[in-house]
Structures are given as structure tokens and as C-alpha cells.
Image 1: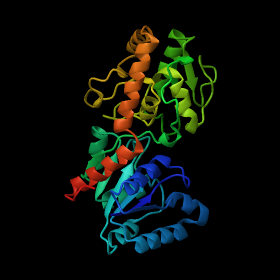
Image 2: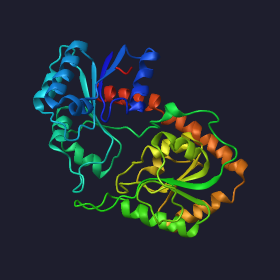
Image 3: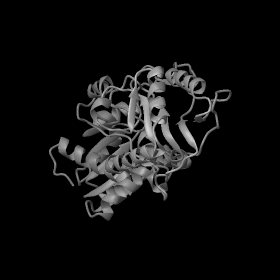
Length: 341
């Protein structure tokens, strides 16, 4: 099987996607993987030349499987999708959307609607009402969780037995815009205020926009997040999109991979995907989060370390790029009745 990817972002930015699909080649599960950062090329050479180059590459490679990632406002139309569908190889086309679009504050763009409607399968990070909105455009939807997309920066010692921080939160403060505020942004801000008040000496805060907040240490480079999580016994989080079932950001698998326990605001579905785990703790209120944190911090460092080892093992088993994108492939193929890789 030949795969052609159209990742979003700057050239080389999607390290997790590249690593995950490359592993399918190295393990002999697929014949080849090629990619073309279409959005990046649109900015560098112009939309029309970039789109022509993308179609020429597809014609040359004759892939069996094509994946488009978050097309946003790229000038892609039905003709572009028809050209891909009309290749002699008759590829399976999958659209992967890693963000939660479809609300008033983040509406689906015309391009996204076109690509979703023209794809064989749509991959999303959240379910529930969010999935239902997309299903009105294309009912063939699979769930693909976020992965530890900076896993290539994983290094020994993987899980530390001694750490300098008790709790850490990495995340930006999202302010109100003309379209309103991102769902969960106000809840995150309230949670940060609570942590700064109740754990003033045991709370480290990283991100943009937190000037004046207790615990603020400023932003941390994306690729250095693993080191920050690795040095904290507990990662605390208030995820965006609290009404979206089964959603969590890439920070959860990254923190677990780093051996940090995870305390996060509950989403529907967590009781299914995190059932019986002793290193992930959803909360329904700030007060409940505080009780959970105090309970965990009352444990010995030996107990926290052993739970951190189990957290890492869980992330390795479920959330590395190699695992997530292999599952993505098989879930897509299974949905349309094709053989798995």
C-alpha cells in the first residue's frame, strides 16, 4: 500500500504524523509514505502552483491511501477532490480534523465542508454532539485520539524518581475575541486562580497570558514540555471543549509518557477510556480537583513514581504516534470494508 499525506502547518512541523506513518514502512506494513505540506507550500509559492504540484505528485505516486489534515481556509474545491478520487489507483481518501470546529465561535470553513463531504472517511478527536454535527455532512466517522506528538524527543531517564515540582499546568490563557471565547477558556482561568490560591507553593504555571497569576513561570517551548512534565509529580489541566465527549488534548499523552499523573476536568466518555486507571483523575469542580491533588500529594514519592511508570506504559501502549496512526489506518479501512494493514 502506498500512502500520500497532506499535513497542515509548516514543513516538518508534524513530527508525530511523520514518525507514525514512517513506522508503518519500517515495519513492513505498507510499501511507502510520502507527504506534501500543502498549506506551507501555498504560502511559499502561491495557492495555484502549490495545488498543481500536489496533484502532480498524486498523479505520479498513484497512492492507495490519501490523508488530508485540517485544511482550514485553503482554496481547495470539489474539482481538487475529484482529481484525487479520479486517480487510476482509486485511493481511499480520509480527512483528519484534530480541532473542534462546528460551533458559532469556530465554524466549519467552506473548504472543510467540501473536503469532509468528498472524503471516504472522516477522523475526529471528539464524539457526542460534535460528531453528530459532522455526521450530517459525512456519516463515516472514526475516533482518533490525540497522540504524544513530540515522542521523538523522549529520552532517558524517562521517569524520574525525584522531582522539583508538585503540580504543573501548561496551557495558554485564551482571551475573548469578536466571536466570543473558546469553550473551556473561562473554566481554565478559574481553575488556575483556584490552584494559585490553594496551592501557592506547590503550583507551577506555564503558558502565554498569565502575567500576574500565582505560579506563573512564562511559556515553555513545545519541544521542552516533556522535560517540564517529567519534573512534576502531577500534571493538572482544564481542557478546552468541555462539552465534547471523549476529547482530550495532546498534553495528556505527553504528560503520561513523561511519567506525570494527570488531574483534568471531566469530559463525557472519560469513564470508558480511562476506567480503572490509577494515574488519571477527572474532576467535576475545582474543589474536587483540590481534594484529588491533596490525596495524591499525601502519598509517598515511591507510590507516585510507581504510578508514573504505569502512566508511561499506558501512553506507550495507546498514544504514541506509531500506535495511533496504525489504528487510524485500520479503523479507516475497516469502516469501508477493506482489509487491515
